[in-house]
Image (cartoon, rainbow, N blue to C red; front, side, top):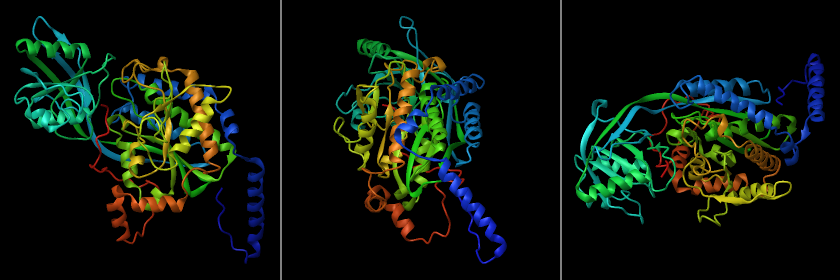
Length: 514
């Protein structure tokens, strides 16, 4: 609650002071102190379902998706803003940014008559074949390297002549974008990345705007067929990629509690966009609805630390919304963030209960101090009665919106329930309302409520503001930002990303699917 300052020197103002004091006293009486289990009990499956049905409807009415740059995302953003705008206890706003948008209208692959056409899936960010028409060229296999990844090093390409040809590249160990950039650099007129596992071919993201060869993804079986045929005496193929690319505006949606310590902020995030191929109800309507219900439930309580909820835009195009947000934070704003919790795909049909490996004990990567404590809280809830679940430590694989926060040294954690084989509709049209494990969604949202309910009142186990500020100053990736801010007198307030910048930084990392 915010009470305006009132002068006591004016007799006529004394009644206003009394009224304000009484109103504040009523708030203290009516609002309960937040505890983890109270917040857990306030999470309902009905609320979670209602939001997902709405997102599913939006996708159905907008070409089957809710993707960046397309009407379904705008409609999703408007639905969210209208809903959270009713909550008087939070401030909400949208943060706009402009990024490179691509859309593939058609992609086909035809090989020799005895092989025939092959199924091929596009990548977000791919380049069109010249004039949107087909190209026919010899196929050439980039030497398979399962140690450092096929086509991941410049030396891999020195071993083969791909100039004027279509390169066949095995998936794995580096990003799709890296492989497509090397193909372009060495003169390939196209590229086919073949899957390294027997799972459905679902495409992915190349990354920010760059120089890529026209590229698509094919299955493990089809890739092996092409490799064998090329080895047996050569083969031609015809590749068509009809696509466009242009800059388009999009948005993050942010809601922040009015109460709570502004120098100890808990940030929760989920991406609001889908891929262009489907509605994105598990990926990531599941995380989005969890945040909506957590925001609604917290209204009943008082708590010590400020809580900020962010629904990210353009995640499926390369984590662009979360990168834009973290790149725009000042050094002081970074130090104000106590931790970040990420919820991306938390209701996979054949889910495991994944908790990010914050202490590095399973996967070896150790994020900022405090991340292990976050992991322990999620694990404590899920493994305790009445759930008694087996928890799978999830790796920080650079595949979701925690990456920008890892880069700036913020403690991170969160939940994840798996792509194929846990979700065989991943990045496909069947990721709709029928692709949700409702029990898993409810359980994971309650786990999120438990962790939020704990940390909103007590940051024990998380570095304090002074320690975080010192770590920011020592972070080599922030050195330029620290020097810039130390050398300027900032006479304006950034308000945690409320600025309406129209262009995000182009200095994004390679953060896409492998």
